[in-house]
Length: 254
Image (cartoon, rainbow, N blue to C red; front, side, top):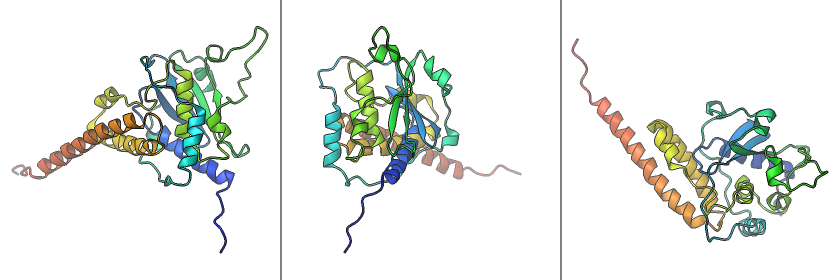
């Protein structure tokens, strides 16, 4: 009997970008947002104005990401997350290179999976000087990808987009947040109940997959999952009751 072949790099890269597209349809994170620019590119925007409070937790290391990926490699099922389509996304800002470079409220990263490279890479697209120490006569080469261990070990381990997001967030924000995927509940309070049912359902599926990665903050993720579940099913019950009440209305007299 022939042994099952490991998926090719192009197949893995295609799955990685499919996961990126799913994350790009999510909304409601506290410290960052992700936006789809093309089938091969997403923009990760880390919010400058939402610095986490000081914490005694140890920041995550890239070695930890690779270690955990090795332990659970080939055990996480590949399911597509419930998410809104790209056509329904309301981009909050221009995703052109010029706009990303001049963004005063966010630090932008390009995460791309180009088939010719057979591996995902991350490029910094704004605020180069404050994040990377350069000598007096040095210039930042914007087309050189960032050195990230989650990307470096992608060929050896089952690295997912959220592994890369964790490393970027914990590198950029000081101090690193207790939970890089903290939920912005105020966002969900501002949208309609119909939108909230869809987006909380998508967020729950994403957080479930994050929880299965066994990060150091998994207990906090589990707490968010429980809170979002209560919100999600409460809204479903409200909509169901509304539909039932509308169905029992007597027809108006002719």
